[in-house]
Amino acid sequence: MELLRFTTAGSVDDGKSTLIGRLLYDSKSIFEDQMAAVKESSERKGLDHADLSLLTDGLRAEREQGITIDVAYRYFATPKRKFIIADTPGHIQYTRNMVTGASTANLALILVDARKGIVDQTCRHSYIASLLQIPHLIVCINKMDLVGYDEQVFNNIVEQYTEFASKLNVNDIRYIPISALNGDNVVNRSANTPWYQGATLLNTLETIHIGSDYNHIDPRFAVQTIIRPHTNEYHDYRGYAGRVAGGIFRTGDKVTILPSGLTSSIKSIVTFDGPVNAAFAPMSVSITLVDEIDISRGDMIVKENNQPNVSQDIDVMICWLNAKGPRTGAKYYVRHTTKEVKAVIKEVVYKMDINSLQRKEEDKEIKMNDIARIRLRTTQPLLFDAYRKNRTTGSLILVDEATNETVAAGMIVD
Image (cartoon, rainbow, N blue to C red; front, side, top):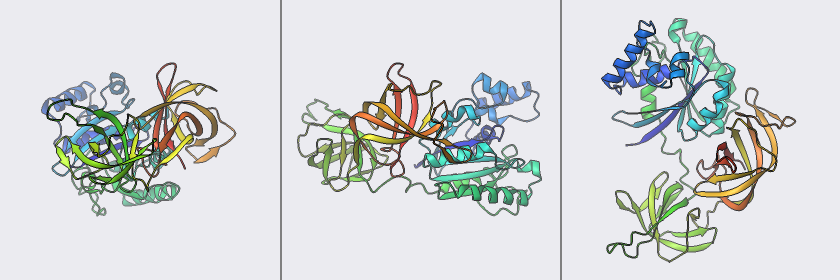
């Protein structure tokens, strides 16, 4: 069954957690004891309805303040698809949490309060979704019940967002009028919006096409580990295990191993369920080759006529995740696909003003949650593609050598 990963984003109190709770509740994905606990907590808070946001806000501080602080992951399935939801915070100081939650998403739900319209956080989160190359956006215009389900209010927000989105790199944007509190157009179509002829949110999530979201053109396979069973049945078996990051690999294909540049042919491709004739992203497989070649973790199997960039100087858009900014000359570990190398930050090219989408070339002091373009110099060449072409081979993280903390998430640019 196909898996769809999606994230929620929006300003504080736009109803992200309530929407996810409503989605889980109306799709019958909640156990009775979970629902009983939510109702009991809601009664203690003096509410006359079940506060569905409690299904995702698990931290005590989140429940007390009625906000989301950390990313909460929830899993559910319908007969058509499996889903992983990342409920991300709306506060400016938790931008880094949104970046981590959205980094693997196929789709982003951008929530807008129908009473407030497009606000700074809407623009901020939409820009981050665009920066992370999330292919699909669904703009959920929430709290329609508080504006009398007015069609004109909905149309005005659609017009505002469409104008703003023209600056973003997103091709698929859809708009749905909802009320997360009452369930309008979340799972079931609402009688309160007869003027809306589109699909409900759940129907859109179930049917949106994500098969072409992966890069099936550029073959990339980063070796994660070497499998040597040393059993009688598989005495000479040497498999290179990992996850296909792009393209299609078939048995018999001629391949090149980087960085050595040696060539061979694919002898077999094996999955957990047995041998297959072809593998494509994001399948996890073990590949065997016809020739005995010295291959280790961090090497990459590619096609001879389609190879990644190889360089020690890399331009990266980063979101800084650490409370302390980057130190001049400090050494960092770069973790990219299955390879780890040391690097230094050579230069901060510019910072982004996320609200205006303007470059700040004078102010280059990076603080937590800032997004900036930097230039890295690594001790060994990396095998990479631009992030816009391949989200797997185009992404990396920076880890502080001294503290072992992850300090930045990066997207490699052309």
